[in-house]
Amino acid sequence: MKVLFVSGTRADWGLLQPLLSLIKDQSDFDARLCLTGQHCESDRASAQAIKDDGFNADFIVDMSIGASPSESEICHAMGRCIAGIGEVLASFDPDLMIVLGDRYEILAAASAALVSRIPIVHLCGGDLTLGAFDDAIRHAVSKMASLHFPTSEGAARRLIQMGEDPDRITVSGSTGIDRIKAIPTFGRKEFERLLGFDPDTEFLLVSFHPETLAQNSNQHLEELISALEALPEVGLLLTGSNADPGASKIDMAFQDLAGRRQNAIYRTNLGSKLYFSALKHASALVGNSSSGLYEAPSFGVPTVNIGDRQKGREQASSVFNCKPQKAEILSTVNAARAWAQTGQRSEVSNPYGDGKAAEAILDRLRPIDDPKSLIRRELQERDV
Image (cartoon, rainbow, N blue to C red; front, side, top):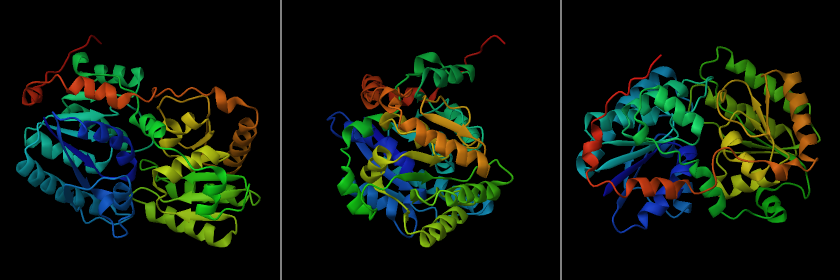
């Protein structure tokens, strides 16, 4: 069976990689990788991270998009992505295209597959993120997809509510947990050496992205920066933002903050091993990244989840929610730090599975003897 994986950001790559690794080892599959979006940015940091994981792109579709595009630039880039993915599909002619999540790059890829009559396998459908336009994109991709692998029972129920056939839905859990179990982390001393932190310094891992449905996202950033400035005794590991409108302002603000503080470091891309090591050693993950809900609970590290970007997702007991206001962010960070000292880190249960998601997906794909027949889908009507 010929399958095409499409990745547009470092985030979806981290979740696709466990499944791609597993399928590449199967003699009855021919798996290829297509990179687009963030992987084609000028610094190529995320593309290099993929090479560091031992993978090379079979196809590259350059959307010619910058680190912080405007809405108009995104629209043009999506058009280029649809055309480029269409050419890839015509040349490789896969039986299935595998995509994950809720990014505009993935919406473009799914649109090309739909027109090309290639069945779509969608991971992480049925989730909710009410503070971003990603929510609508995810649901749109789900409606174009032929097979669904949601991360939770709640997400599966929402797919059924949307009219998807229960026989085409398999609750797999998150492949991110598979990746966590497969990648060893650095010990504290080696981690500090690699990043240049002072030995034994308490630090916060900060990952913040634009809340694309908010009208005052710049204010949210200012409130976060003010809260972090009120914690001069705590180290900061600040990471780069996604390629969404407003991302460059976040990156510039983080770089400026790192330049003004001796105990703060900015990194555009940490790579999986360093990022998971940061989750292991940090006092808390602060921001609005989905990794705070998906991956962080597996390390028992508390998440300070700011604003509505992740609103609607299932949450572990280690997630602390707060409004994007300085005083509330500050008090919630301190509450999370105190919680981490109580011993409850070891008791956290991750609601997104047990680390066997890739196996569950492969088990569902392998028996398919006529993949092209999956392109025909029927709305499953429900009583309302």
